Image (cartoon, rainbow, N blue to C red; front, side):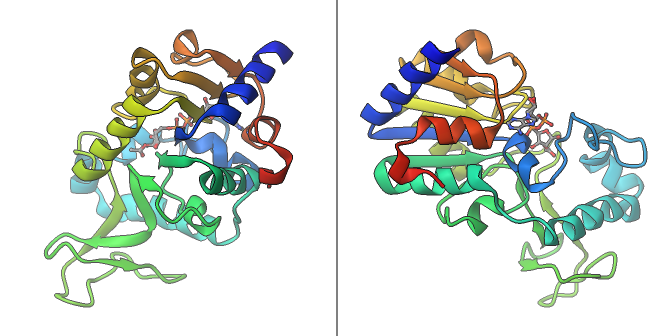
Length: 243
Ligand code: OAD
């Protein structure tokens, strides 16, 4: 769709207020498997079976084993040009960057103010006192809180749990007020993040989706780029901003 790409690039070049939502597809080029693509199952289980308070209550060891394997895999992963392009975009626009990813790769690429709606699995969260701390390679299961000795759980938001209120509010405000919304590498199936793109469309923003596959957001998007995140973002940015 070369026409759509040109129009999207022009809309982004004019915009001052930009809101971006990213999902697992943004980290695919870093070798982090998406949830609903190949490699998304763990020991035959879907994330909806493991990322829940019920799974934690039933078998915390298994839940930790899944998160630890993902944490260990992340140590070998590095941010890719899609992460870097979004960090560069923040230097030219007033960008609110919102991610569903828990891999910390946006921060590692230099996006300090990223809103991590689903948490960050490089840290543990104390069930007793609420402290968070960085996990070390080969950590024991379950990790224990250095402050109160309480049991640590993964610092991730699970299905059925509330998202951080402040982050969600700031994300919704940004998507309601932006001129351009970029929705990159998400299946747009998991609420409430999935609604952010539609919210921007309803408020009159120009909505750009980057995803090799159609999603429920496609019908609301002004431009849908059917390609990977690295290529899509690179093609939208002026040369100076490209990673
Ligand atoms: P999904 O695994 O549901 O979707 C990944 C999306 O990325 C799909 O639509 C793919 O088509 C697309 N994709 C694949 N490769 C890509 C690439 N190279 N560039 C761009 N896009 C690509 O991941 P999310 O939408 O992020 O939540 O999943 C949302 C939430 O569901 C996750 O945050 C997680 C999960 O269960 C929790 O754990 C609470």
